Length: 434
Ligand code: GLC
Image 1 (cartoon, rainbow, N blue to C red):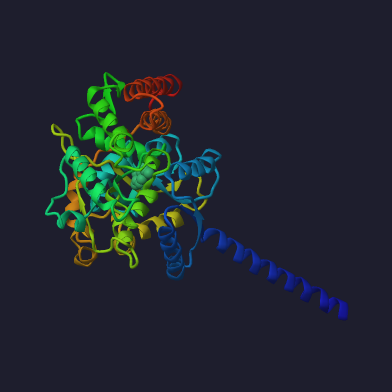
Image 2 (tube, rainbow, N blue to C red):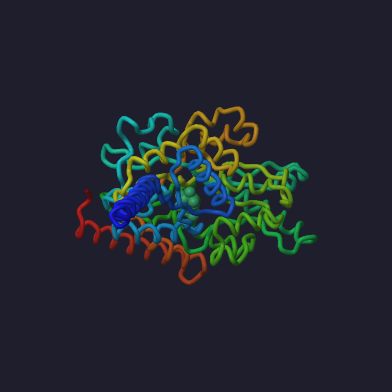
C-alpha cells in the first residue's frame, strides 16, 4: 500500500518540476535578446544602463555584446557571426557604410510593416539615402554624424580672429598661433584630424577633396580618383604634418577620433576635425578646454564649399534572429522619442528623429544642434556599393601611403584608382549587382 502511494507522488513531483523548468526555459528563450554595440566607454555605459531599464519595463533581458570602438573591428566581428548565419546578435548597430552590403548579403530582416516606425519622423534625406534596400526599410538611424571643425574660441577671440572659412586661412592661423602657444606649451599643435589607416581617413579625405570639388567620382560606371582636385587636396593633407608641421607626426600613423579628441581636450590643439560626439566630452568637468571651444563648418578651397562626410550608426535586425518580434520591440524602443532624446542629451550625438532638433531641452544642453541641420543636409555620403568595405581598404592603404610619404600623392591616387577599379570589376564579374 505504502509503495503504491509513493509512486504516483514521486512521479507527480518530477512532472511538476519538469514542467516548471520547461516553462521557465521557454519563457527565457523567447524573452532574451543579444544586442551588439561598441564605442567609447561612456557610450557602452549608456547602453548598459538603458538595457537594464528596458528589462525592468518589458521583462525582456538584453545581453550586450560589447564591441571595440573602431568601426573596422566592429564590422569584422559582425561579419563573422552573420556570414555563418548565427542567431546572435539579434540586433546590432551598423556604420552607415555597411548597410548596402549587409542588405545585399541577405543579412537584414526588414523593419517596415504595420508595427514598424514611421520613416518620415527621421531627418530628411537620411533614411532614403541609407536605410532602404529596394523598397524595403532595412535599418533606422540611431545617430547621425557629420564632420565638423572644433576650435579654441578663447585663443581666436583674444586675438580678435574669426574661425577660418578656407583651408589656407586655417593653415595661416595654425602656423601663427602654434608658434606663440609653443612658448608656454611645447606640445601644442595647430590642427588634429584623423589620418591613420582606417575608415575615418576616408571621411577626412572626402571632406578635404570634396571641398575642392573632388572626391570619389564615378564616370561611365568607372571609379575616378586621380584628378587634379584630389591631388591638390591630398598634397595639402600630407603637407600639414610634413611641410608645415602644424599636425603631429602621429596624425598619419595613429590618430583616430579619440586620439584627436584627447589631444584637443588636453589643451594641445587649436583646431580639431571630429564628429559631434566630441562636444559634450570637451565640456566635462576637468576638461582643459571646458567653456573655451566652439564649432564651425569645415573649411574649403577657394573654388569649393564646406563639405562634411555623412557618418552615423543605424540599427538593424539579423535575418537569423530566432525572435524577430521581440527584436522589433527593442528597435521601436531605441528609436522612440524618449530614448533618442536621452542619447542626444547624455552622449551629445545627433539623433535620427528630426523633431529633436527643435526640442527646447535638447537645445538648452546642445545649442549648436540648431545649426547642424544644415550641415546634415549637405553632408556627403560615401559610395553606397555592396563592395564598399573592399573599396575602402584599398583607398585607406594608398591614401595613407601618400600621407606618410611612402609614395607621392600622385602615385597614391593612381594606385588607389587602379585598385578600386579592379575591385569594382571583380565584383561586377563575380556577383552582378542585385
Ligand atoms: C564615425 C561615423 C562613421 C564612420 C567612422 C569612421 O563613427 O559615424 O560613419 O565610418 O566614424 O571612423
